Image 1 (cartoon, protein in one colour):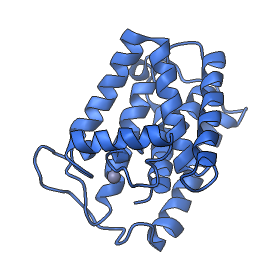
Image 2 (spheres, protein in one colour):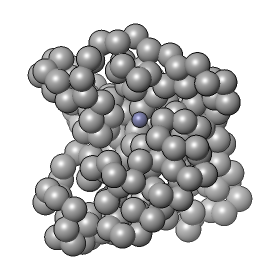
Image 3 (cartoon, rainbow, N blue to C red):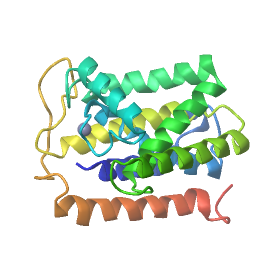
Length: 233
Ligand SMILES: [Zn+2]
């Protein structure tokens, strides 16, 4: 599955679930801004498992820095589609984000926001194509703007952030399970799980059917939960 499809799937799952969860679960009542920001950050989190792939189109999202990071993640996790494609990784990302938001506070939240925004901007192709500096310098600029916005207009600690990160990571695994190589969900067990719906990454089932359906669903959900002024609380 392509990075773009993963990002759209993360966005859709967040838009389809977060506004309907009881406030207790997310430790906050979601405002429209929380829903919109959460949707974008969840789209970014849906790329996290592929940080184990230094050649992927995503790897260059922060230039040489992220390429080095991807090499490290690949080395530490046993290569592409290993540890980072497991439910254990989903739990670790969710718990790690919760711990960071809870114990490290605002700086952690803003750093993670910047990182996830950068991933989302790259995957959703909101920057120039290619791996050159014009791509990643644009990404850094846009992510910095978004992080500034988060800092300015969303002062409280976002209780929804751990949920967005875990859900995005999970969305990625589900997406990879639709492809031929599957994902080792129960890693360290080696078995891979798959229901092959997409025979070749980027084929027409993925780009002409799944992605358009997920994109429209995301916009419709966001319209009713965050954008339409008559329905918001
Ligand atoms: Zn993957």
